[in-house]
Image 1: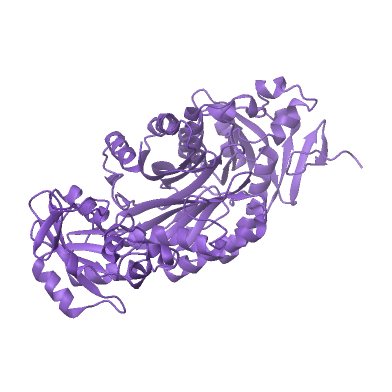
Image 2: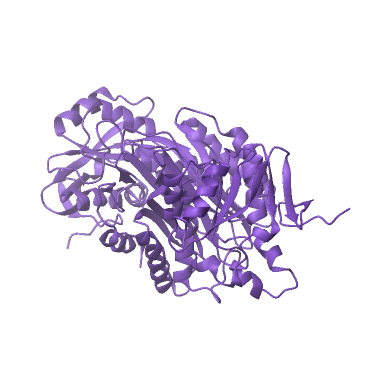
Length: 304
Length: 304
């Protein structure tokens, strides 16, 4: 499938909608004016670095390439609008690979009403590379950044954490709807998706918000996968340090947090209270009523 | 330079402006609401396929990666707003390579008031790959697509064509300002940038507009580089077939075209009248008052 045939193929599959004035095939796509601020994010997946085609099907690669970008829009409590996709395809089985890749992209894009409006398709002598850029619109309340957490805020997390390498990193559901539901229920002070690992991502909130945080070991929701890792590290270690769970961490006023924990407003996803923001800078883990420094990589400093 | 350091470095260099509400460093960038329709385009450059680092400096690669996207915005008569950049960096000389690449991106982005608002920086075992997505705003008159040419329209081209491989393909100026100036002077029916080659790109206009076109051999503005190619093909062949000149081809009413040709409103860039749109489908070349079919690849069919 050459570039022109691919554009034709894609055009037939791009739903016309009020938000897409012009889809693939011209020099640029055209989107309808958006009354809200526009969110922009991009993520690239590289064969051998982010996935191996021996273990991961091209369709799964396509799904993940779209889903990681949707997770970034979710992490602002935004609504996805449209995506463009650039690929470098290896010369072996190029056509089948391209088709599976795009079916995967479309699986996830369709599930979140996201139009694929353009792209750049190349064949080369290198490994498979795919880059997705996703545009979204900010919620009317304003996008929720990492920067608004305050001392006294409670930290909540969706779902369970750890061991995503056993499968969830490929098959996760980006928390787009959950973020919108949560924002409709309460003002969110800060929001992030767990891509680098819980400790690292809570640390991002702290750095951007100018505060610290205490996580409570007993309260971290540990996934079944984290318990199955069996590599000598504890399930809690995995929940603190593993990346790519793509759950949401939110900081919000304690009273609002109590209300959300009581109401559990998310279908099929449990909200857990994992800690609090504090004025003192740094990241801490509390276990058995004792507080120890926690490195952003998830490492718990032993008592000195 | 790891990803976090790179984000810090980029943040310091991203100009705050009324159009960028949040630059690099959060889950997404945030752009101010745009009253005009939004233009979106993406282009990927791959080492060994689009460039060789033995011949092309990383700074030139960065410049070209930004410039080809700007040329697509120019081809809609749009105004560039903001870009995101994904890169896969080889493990050799990674830091120097990344810095030169971004300096090249910034050279061109700065010249066109385009903010780099985000990206995804990766290191891998593969060759250098860079993907830029550029957002722009449509002009108040509406974006100029490939689809509006009418029989009787004149076809004009900016600058000279052919032989861009000798240097222009790396050092061209995207015709962003020229497209805006032309649109301010006259209604443009169709517009495209010469990336695939003059014949191919005029053919794109014909296909999208549902018309044909005649080009006049004597009128094609042939570049010095096309004359220097010395590979047995004529300079006219090069001007018709070579890609990556990134000049503009426009279709507009004959009376408007005559006026623009007389006024020559573009500083330092000459407008030339290269042919007309016709009702009969297909692409033709006229030379010595004889008309022959012209293949979209630039091949002139002999009499037969």
